[in-house]
Length: 320
Image (cartoon, rainbow, N blue to C red; front, side, top):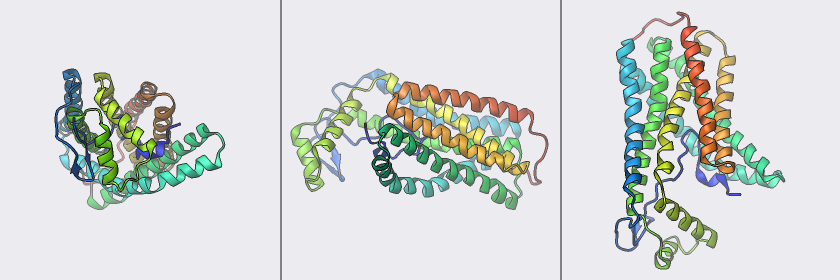
């Protein structure tokens, strides 16, 4: 079973293929280019178009949702910016912690649990719980402390725009990473023995045979991409934005209506979504993972609709 700890997954940020700095006759490693640069000889224009559509959607859809929300409810883009900014702030703390601890945690679970499938499931829950605690508690503190100190209304409209900003900046960042993957795709080609040797020398000759095989497999996967490998990423971003809005409104309800149980439920829901994404991506493949996320997104859309209709009028003063 492939070790998921090597992916650096923080879930809801999961991409099928991370950016590779590669080219036709050489690859980039440790800041050095080994060999001349040529274009991917197998480049498929349909794949390039899929990349362009995905990148445009990842970046433009959140901005379009923000523009609609500000115009529809007459509120400021500042709320969108606060959602984006606090997402980045939370990830500055959350992501390094995950990267520093995920490998030892997974190795511990592998050594403790005889059933490796069970070890993977436990690891997925740990990653999901970390994401849920950091993001949902972060949202709670922003609403309970920052919004109130600044006199910002704890309204459902502000919650909606804040959630769009929170999930939207994630989508925009991933869109930029997908753009880097497009560049890698355009420059990718099978690796020669000479190139692999050059890369191995650049890291002090420490690459194992398994690591070399992983590098070759990753490059082969990049070269052989199809539009169906790229386009689901756009659908995934739209689903995760929906989930972020639902989580935001649930946490905001916890603050406004003084029901801390909703914060706990938001953490558990976020944990479940992320844990499913990690576990299913490793055991059932991308299609099943996306279908599970779709089911969660439909549930989130239903929760958003129900909450919107039953919100009431409890807010603080100082609306923008």
